[in-house]
Image (cartoon, rainbow, N blue to C red; front, side, top):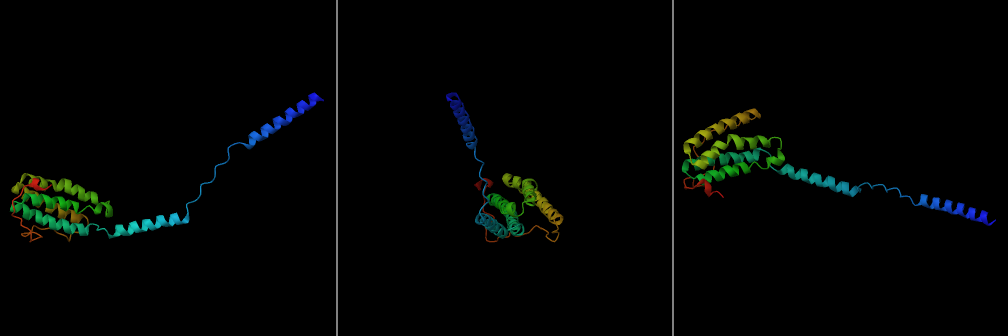
Length: 182
């Protein structure tokens, strides 16, 4: 009888051990909760605000108005020997187009290419204080501008050389160096 009891106890202990091990297996991971409706609404609201702000940033037309004024002023500054002002006007003419990086990301590379290639001879002539090279490069840029305007469907925008600068309240004859621009 003692042998049977021992055997029965071993069987019972073995069964309990197996049952306990099975019960201790890793629990199933909890499902990932869906984002709270408020968080989704906040994201949509934030995107709407971003789009509204982006809509208020000038596209091409407003910055181009500043580009045109500065372009005219560059010529007056170069003719007057105010090379620092010419360099300044060129630098800020380019910076005026920065909003287009955001508002017109497909068109902005055309401006960037224009300024770094077509406009480079103008900047080189300013740096060299070479009025003859400046006049030649400036005239070439006008032709490039008109060609670009026409190719983009704006052939009614034709740039011409002006005798007077856009801003008449500036002294364009103040002698300065291109390096005066810091």
